[in-house]
Image (cartoon, rainbow, N blue to C red; front, top):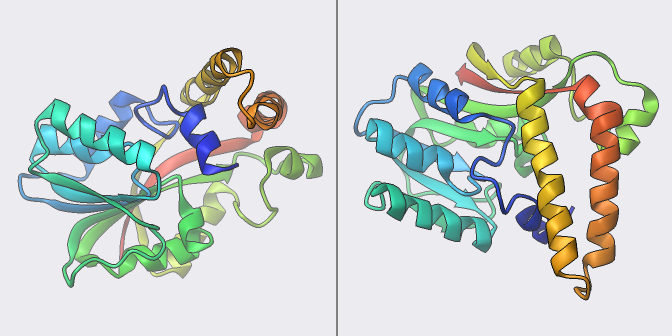
Length: 245
């Protein structure tokens, strides 16, 4: 899916993952954030994680994303919460981003492990700016039960991209990380994240019948709806995993 399709589909979202407000706050509590904690958020989207935690806990951080649209929303949210002096947002490819020589207490990448070519590559990217003893937060899908062969094509997922929950834990270990906590989505939060995009896309199609992307977006909506109802909500799970190296 093109970046523009993401920007349209998630235009009504504040959190660009199947994570509820309560669970985003819980994740912050788990990380024991205190004033001055430094965080780097790779593929930060609209920056809700950084801006909210800056407001609640006094965190200071940097968010990186390739979307001008999402970053504009992130900066607006920082202004709204009064934390523009605590967080900054950089337009860049998160998979190639290199900060000045410094280490962060928390490095996160929620739902975007494609930036490193998959989970293991992304963990390697996250390790570099993470201080010794710091926390890595990675949001990743897993298979609740093994899906039928046709699910991979319908969902647009390569066979080896995700594994079981236990297999995901084994991937963390093979990368040299210890899984110390996790905050998991449930069926309702998946539905709220995915199904609300259907409404947004449907409204966009009604209001933009002459846009050159309209046929492709209509096809995307039809496929997204069908794949979630038939396979996604039955086989695909998602969670944020709290790791230490």
